[in-house]
Image 1: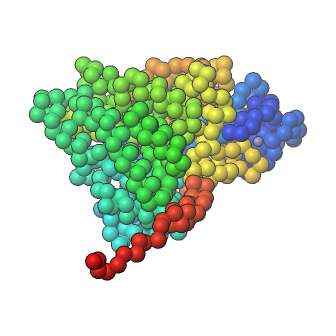
Image 2 (image 1 turned 120 degrees about the horizontal axis):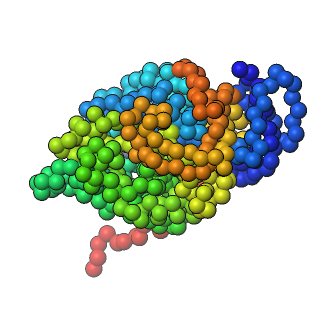
Length: 488
Ligand code: URP
Ligand code: ZN
Ligand code: ZN
Ligand code: ZN
């Protein structure tokens, strides 16, 4: 296969502009975008007439080879990424989980896991405790390891959860480093109470998962995190926004001028909680994730929030557990490993739900699935754009051919799929990653070790002018009132 590729005659779409043009690629980099490029016969030519040529998807939220709830996800950095490529995603950002509280040890473990990568990837880092060492390690991660975001869990009591005091310390550290603070927003103490209550009531099945952690607890934690980020004056990224309750807190904060980003995920945009009441345990348990998939209505509201700019980008929270692993919780929903798939389905699901339905333009699709993620995590325009000099991460989508999602034909190692049976128009026919054609004619051509670690630098656009806001606040403070020592 040649390292020179010409994509001919497609509609090239960026987040801000689209045109019919050819795209010429050499050695993994986009060299030229213009009409009627002519080349020699050493160049591989792909005809894209009548199709959309777009930046490959970037999934901001995945968990590959994740050790969680007494087991480990079935998709590792090879199988999860291969699945991603087959679905038009060419980069993902995974969450490094500290090892026994050590960020450094956690990072080294994930470096090892990622050696088999066949697609470019970056890392966020979770912070699950607080002391001087963690604080120093955060600095090391930002200054030397290419990490520019830290996630704090307000749920998973007794495991990953931290309290508000530590959250404030973490936010302050993030601000000083120019790193983006992220939160899993559910009230973990209340969830713990809710779970006990369900078990006492004899509700031990998957429906207990939804009943024990209602949307009000997501709204509460989202509001709390947003207000504490405002108090510290640092930007905030809310991961997996699943409910109207959380979304409306983000809307309110953004309306008041606060820098808050909201990330819905593919599952939350199109599914509803009724599956958790399914009489077959296996069917119900595959939908268990946290925060839970909500009642019908939340999905449509999240779609509308995406299309109007209240929410900014779409992730997946891909965290794949097989039916045998889900069965760990057959007698107690609290032991069902939390997580659903999405890394392979996101691009098709968003196209079908948002573009085919007429809610957003094709340019908006590019922004929500790729460009905005690249901007937030400071890797634009290397990623998230079809521009001269950008990485050749490109998809070709045919708006007239159909896709169908089923566990039988997907590329993840999962034996189930929460989007089972979903079909629609707009199939991603070709994926080019790092200048290589990795997906074509329904065939994957991937090799372990070809993916690269993408370092992300701090102080993204979200931090521009943050200090001026602090200065303005200080100026607005009045001088202390002078009072006499003694009164008569
Ligand atoms: O259920 C979920 N979301 N599993 C993955 C871990 C997390 O909270 O993101
Ligand atoms: Zn342009
Ligand atoms: Zn989470
Ligand atoms: Zn997650």
